[in-house]
Length: 475
Ligand code: GDP
View 1 (cartoon, protein in one colour):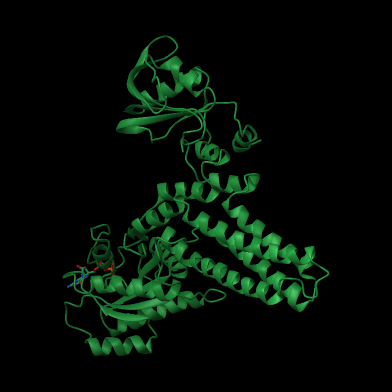
View 2 (cartoon, rainbow, N blue to C red):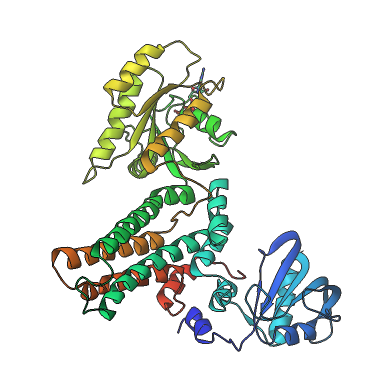
């Protein structure tokens, strides 16, 4: 049995009390140690000299171990079941930070009868006690790992139950169609039944559309969560690292006038809304006999293949042509060929060179999504480039609404796509194969189940394991 299985087997009504640091151990003013379970209060009282007389009350107290040695002065906050995060009796001890204080306090709590929590076990208990559903549990992890404000907003919306409500409403509509058909079974003697097939079909059409719309948010959800991969490509020395720094807004790449100095890929998140960008500055994509540079080039190629957008950089027409040809070559070498958008970026626009008209004409010939002239030196064109990246992503994934439900995980996409496929199967079985609607309705039932599993049939052990694998201990 894995630790997670063990914790699940013990619930609901877990008998053991778990403890963990809810904040990372290390230098810091405070550290929060969390305790949850039926004996949380009893165990905490063995370690605290003073104890809050009522739930949600905090007291300042000395903490001590079994030998009576003082460990810290802390604030202790008491929660009584079910009014707590996990739904169990809980205690939060705000100790001093660092490593020694929280670890000795945790050791004292273990000696007093608690056991160390598994990763995500507090949230898992909250879920099993009905405090949140699986989508909200996932949102908790997303919020903690959010790398951009857009990802933070989407996670908060999901934590607030936005996606859960949308999916529950869609499931209700599946059940309504099931009910329309069940009505038919109840009144079989009537000619066409009291519900016309047209009414059921209309409800089905509109439900399929609504589920399709939600499914269509999966691409934008992924781009928001992960950041859209935007890769800088072009010959060495055309100004990619300088452009990377200008876009990121601070000096991360080492900029030198020697060709071939960006040996590996540098990555940074540009926190723009609605699309956060994972910007990657690659090594020059050029043939070389230098082994280390060759390795850098292979890394660059793999980034180009996964990119949503490649910024093909060059300071003149020749280097721009070469950048596009190299990127095309990399994309076409995959089987099937990878597709991605290319933006033609004329660098060092503060220096003489390609006039705007010629740049636009070149962009057309090279079939670029957009063309821009930028100067990392003066900053001219940088904002326009960010806007052009945003517009290109809008074309690709549809402009996202950050405060509306969005599918952010492969699990969501699978579940919603499964539900949609089952609705299609229902329609085919009923309307094309001529099966009685009541027989075809097995697919409606499967669609409702697929949606239910997304929110959380708590018996679905496998789903829970998938979700909680991503958690840290103490959450
Ligand atoms: P990379 O090899 O493509 O990453 O090129 P770098 O960013 O290292 O730049 C190569 C050289 O071009 C450096 O000397 C930079 O200072 C210079 N450079 C980069 N961008 C600009 C720019 O916008 N204007 C001017 N005048 N020089 C630039």
